[in-house]
Length: 337
Ligand code: EPU
Image 1 (cartoon, rainbow, N blue to C red):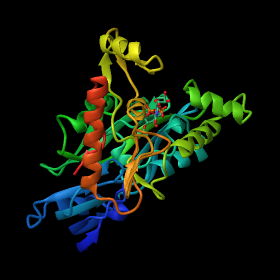
Image 2 (image 1 turned 120 degrees about the vertical axis):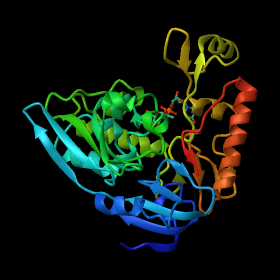
Image 3 (image 1 turned 45 degrees about the vertical axis):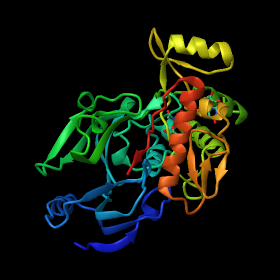
């Protein structure tokens, strides 16, 4: 076991924030993870998976544990379906590509989402009409208290929009070590009704798309709108799309005829935060090394050496402005540490 000292966390968070960890260890087997968690001389610990949903604001004066558990295994299969267990440290997109290569369907719409397999259930990652929960069977997690592995079924996880039990009652109590998925081997159920996908497939001249075609369309759309974290630091959507009452929506519509919305329930709708932020004039604004992405206002970016605190200040200014202009509260999706 090798604990390093004074390590920059810049390569371990997709925002590319350069803060230091006092101590750092990358763990690739569960026994080692258990040992590290039991270290009494390191009471202050921070876990990092793909580092794709966090904004680091200061040096971490404790032990950072990088979850690097690798491995993908087929648990069972029949003619129609396959059950696959992937370990937490597998890169999400590489896992998607592995599934596509094997012609396993269900997660093609989730192509190119940054992060790792193990963090995907925490916020129930989603894009273009598909959410992780649609293919999720169960996950295994190491309890920080008992150091034993517990299995969480889909029901146990209580998935919601960018939400799960791991963000609520079970927050900070477990480390997800693997996720089990059920995918299709044939008669794939394609989700191509999301506007941009249909038009992209049309542009590609594809009438009967395969799961690989859908993935290509998704990759194309994402690349044209969302910054690649390897080039411009970011954490995807910084805010969640707010759910507001229909009454408020109707009032807003009086002033802003073009306001988009998605149905949620009889009295509520979801409004794209990206639209509100753009309308408020923030889209593409740059303040030195940080700002709001020019093609998708929901994404805050680090152009180089931004400081996490500056990005937090910008996010608060955006929240305040959206509240003042539209009377809508928007909540950060990213964890601020
Ligand atoms: N919009 C604007 N201006 C913008 C951005 C968006 O007017 O700058 C409008 C668009 O015109 C469209 C609507 O907002 O009418 C929705 O935009 P988009 O399809 O880009 O999706 P989103 O609601 O902004 C969500 C997810 C993304 C996911 C996309 C596609 C959340 C918080 N974000 O964004 O997820 O890729 O849908 O399904 O739900 C992520 O979570 O990190 C992420 C990137």
